[in-house]
Length: 220
Image (cartoon, rainbow, N blue to C red):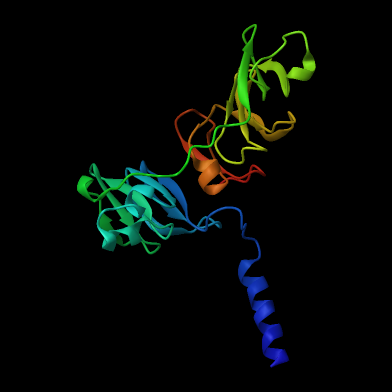
């Protein structure tokens, strides 16, 4: 029995080595203007065929559907995709299991969480504050004194948010301590929910083609 348990532990270590637990095992990937899904190693798991492909995540409208038998498709085991202007939920093998209908959708009831930190503009530059009112002359009133062309606080961890910043016309990611998380080397970083949903940032080096990077700037 002891030998079997040791083997199980070793097998688990090998099977998960090199994978990040922080990000999803299936990641949307656009190839030739169509989107499918890859794994963390870059292998195509679901062939690109969709105009829109979102992360595998909950859909609160379906979770609260008036039709009880459809609520299962609102779980994080499924993803929302769109093809030919028709939206579906697919499973992790790429099978379409549900086609969206307006009458099937309920209301989202998640409470709104007000952000603790927000961008503040002074003399044309952006900084970061956590107070409602700021004394311009008091550096201590600022978490980050205004010095950027743009700041945008991403949804996610309210106490320790990730922040899109622009410096010298390049996009990067900083934290509330003004430490660089993602270097300023991108033409654009989208202000979407990819960080909150999947711990990934959607970036572009030419302003047209987008891909994902994690907090270590590893591309997917």
